[in-house]
Length: 226
Image 1 (tube, rainbow, N blue to C red):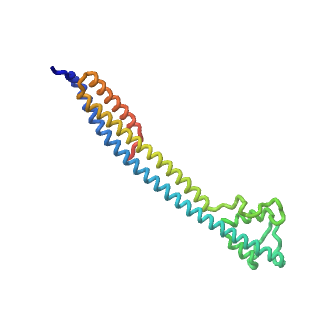
Image 2 (cartoon, rainbow, N blue to C red):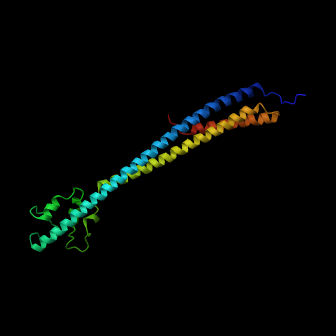
Image 3 (cartoon, rainbow, N blue to C red):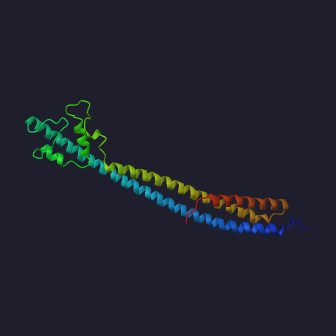
């Protein structure tokens, strides 16, 4: 006695064949996209690492520039103090005029371009006679280092690249997951005709179609790269 389930209608076989073919293509496409997004993730992480390295260099440069300015300012203060004591330079009260013939003037003329605006603004507060004036030019808002700004910009770039890498990684994972779902649709479609009961055949055929359509919709909605 033949207890096999009756064959599925021809149109169901056709649908399952199309599902299997498209699922195979979709699985290959998902694998391709996953590999591409993984590559972009690696590039983004490399960009983030390079930006952080450059940021560290810029921070080091800023520290060195700040140290140069500190040494120059300390030397200027010492030189001016000696000149005031010796009576060769007037005590600055907001109208300091560097005298190239004196050591303080020599040092002033050699201040770094980024330091001089802050120093001039500090002198204008009459720090030697005004107790409310900032203690040093380094507290002035005019004291800005290009290397500091560059370091901050590079850190922002590194953070943005890292965020892109995490996003690329998630997209790669999404495609891997979709490949697994499509493989499940392939499995359902492949075993549907081998079931011994009509109910199992229809159940697995329906599952294959539903799973495939769901995966296809998600894959179409996912971002793509070439």
